[in-house]
Length: 386
Image (cartoon, rainbow, N blue to C red; front, side, top):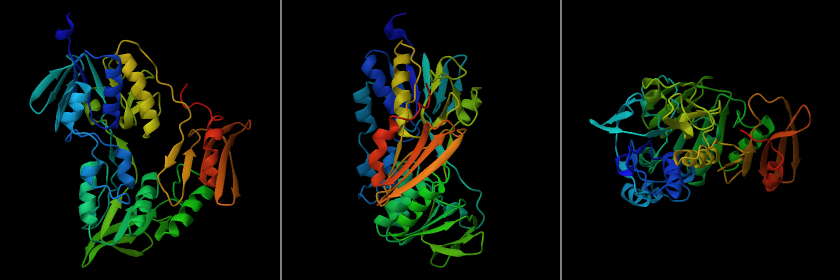
């Protein structure tokens, strides 16, 4: 079949995953038709910037790096903004969106993830905000304009980043988390306490080991009632308790899903002509909602799409947490790893090393001046996916 008659490669999603795989693919293949479907305006921006944009004075418009039209030109792609995909048919290789239909030779799902929403009680539960894209950020900016008091639900990575950003921008910030220390799923207690105490010095109040009982409207804003009866007065409440991979489309299409859309190491789903990557994907059992694994996956998938089947390999991929008040680099051990944390504090830095039963380094968390050891220690870590 002539190239002009070939069905296009279709990518659903124009976040960092979708645009990165498109860009990497175009480096290898200049000719194959590329169609991209976006749920929003399809503008290109860096989603990780959302949690530290306020202190940098970044407006929603300033975060935009390229418009949909500019991306279409750069990638020589047909980009459809505000495309509401209603169904995927793996048998006929057709996608329906906005009443239209497109066929594909290969489909890439780069759907991202949705903020996890707690089933909160109270008449202001629907007023709780989350920031997962540029439009959310615009609504959040509008809600806190001219206000002072912000309550954050969740003391994980994103919660800590937003707390630092808001406090640095002059807001009074309170963080609520059910864990005994911030970043509870990623770092040992000693490192979590360093984060807690350091962010406290810039005015952040912590309410740990507590949940939210109720969120109600009050005369001067929102009242948040905690499980121990304490009430906090806020002008806005931000939920930052984690992400849930978007699997609804894949489920409806009959693809295998678990925590995310299940793929093998080639990013192939249970349908041979459908791939998935990024926050929506569960690659060889791993759900890794971070930039570095996404970039590794995009490069591998681009090669596969261009005719060179390439499995993704994940090296050790440390995460730099965007909390300038408390510099932190983490490379958590695997969830099933057996071993022990060894903590050492020296001057303005704390180093936590997780060693396996054989003494091998399996993970680390570094704060302050100890972050200078990142490169040396990373060399000793095992690969995440061989």
